[in-house]
Amino acid sequence: MVSILRQSWLILFLLPLFLSTCLFYYSYHREKIIERANKETEIFIATAEATRSYVKEVLRPKMYKIFHDERFIPEAMSTSHIGREIMRRIGKNFPYMEYKRAALNPRNPINRADDLEKNVIEEVKALKEKEVTRLLNRKGTLYFARFKAIYAEKSCLKCHGRPEDAPKDLLKLYGKSGGFNYRPGDIVAVDAVYIPVGPAISNLKKQVISTFLIGLIVLIFIVFSLRLLIHYEFLPHLRKLSFYLRSIIPGREAESPSPEEDNIEKMAASLEDLAIEVKRIHTELKKSEQKYRSLFESSQDAILMWNQERKLVDINPSGLKLFGFLDKSEALQIETIEQLFWDHQEALELLEKLEREGQIKEFETTVVDRGGNRYQILITASKAIDLGGLVLYEGIFRDITEKKLMEKHIITTEKLAAVGQLAAGLAHEINNSLSVIKCYANLLTKVNNLDEQAQKDLEIIKKHVKLSQDILQNLLNFSRPAEYKKAYVNVNEIIEEVVSVFASRFKKRSISLVLDLSPEAPALFLDRDKIKQVFMNMILNAVQAIERDGLIEIKTIFNKARQEVVIKIRDTGSGIPETIIDKIFDPFFTTKAPGEGTGLGLSVSYGIVKDHDGKIFVESKVGEGTTFTIVFPVNES
Image 1 (cartoon, rainbow, N blue to C red):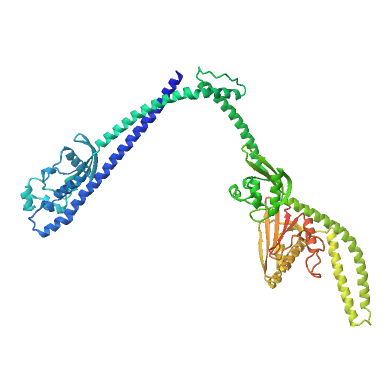
Image 2 (cartoon, helix red, strand yellow):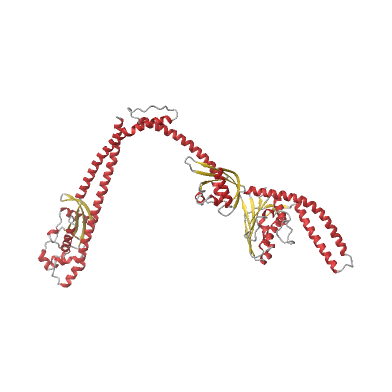
């Protein structure tokens, strides 16, 4: 009984849908039939109008020139006669089309308007329309009709004005009763074209009704066929499935399938319970996925995932930031993950080890971003296989560049402290000996009997003693705490002051200077003279590195977020090799020729910056130049 009701509801549901489709089909194709008739009547009316215009504008004036005014030949001069004959010949190819020039008071009785046409003429007069269309019943069927009004013109009054002005031949043919006494603008007649649409619409209606009846029969047949198919083919399997679903749902006892009862209700209940269970599991999985995704997205370390083809499949925001990608789609376009490593061989070693062992821990390497910048990275990665057998690799890339720089700074600081302590002791002892040498040299210069060469030798001794004492003084200044006279100063002003000292040297060596000093940089609590000494050392090194024809760029930046002022001094000189870049802040280390430098300039500068709670970094590429970066904190108090 339940199944029969279900089938009835299915039929009642599908029947209006099918009926609506049939009605839509009928309405659509009926409009198409009328639209086609409309287009055809438009063409036929245009043909009749073209014929009338040709007779009126070309043929009739030509005949008047040939004959005198009293001659009238209908076959060459009457628009009605010629139009009717041409449309009759056209009608042989289109037998369904009917044409008539209908008039209320025609000259030729064949053109007299019937009651329908009279109404149309009166309507056109009232509405002052030139053309109207109608669907009308005529001769027992439905027609589509188009009517075009023909108005009297001045040139028409010779034949349609006063009878006494008409050609005699015309009066002999038609008499004086019809077609006269019109004025310009009066409706003389209407061109009427009729095309039957009733038979086509009737056939369409029969087609739709037969289709509906056949469809209804087919629908009933399909519904009952489905009933039989479900009852004998699907229900046994559904009973088994219902039993299985009940057995896997927690807290539900499975009942043995019974072939006598209809298990659709039980099956629906089992599916509902299963859907609730699936929803619960899905919610838990979604929560787990959201938790993982949250960790993935918010991680401060870069997290990358790639497949067996070493193609990147996912990357978190920290990874995008580390490698300088604009968005994830750009990152996923790289060919292989190997492109992210500075050393290709090292990348192959890491990836092969990961494939072989399944995991790696704290593998230190260097990566490069899309701008060519290098970073020291610590990688921990593992291999995973999902349920579908797809192999994926996940790696955590921790940026330890700053940590490495800090370690280098700590090592440099400790080294400088040790060297400073040693230098202080040595400088004191050596300075005593130099003082004795200087004293005796001064005594010897006072001896009168010394020759000129001896005097020159003594001057050389005194000169080198003085040079040695200056070096020792610099060493002592470096090794012992200095006294700073700090005040709030503007670093931009200090830079401009130092640069002005080097102006002549820049010009002499054809060195271009670019200053990009931020007006937002606040005053800093610094020792003006000491900081000036730092900038002097830096710019002097840049000038000596360029030698000739180069560029020095000095830029100040105020980092509001970190409350720091950053000074960058970049040159396009020869650059510093990687093998010695870690030694440039060591005392007495220099790449200059003997006698050209003591090797204390950068060491002293490092100490001064450090004593002002600042940081100093160096980046260099051989053949491209060097950039020194000095960072001072802003003292808000």
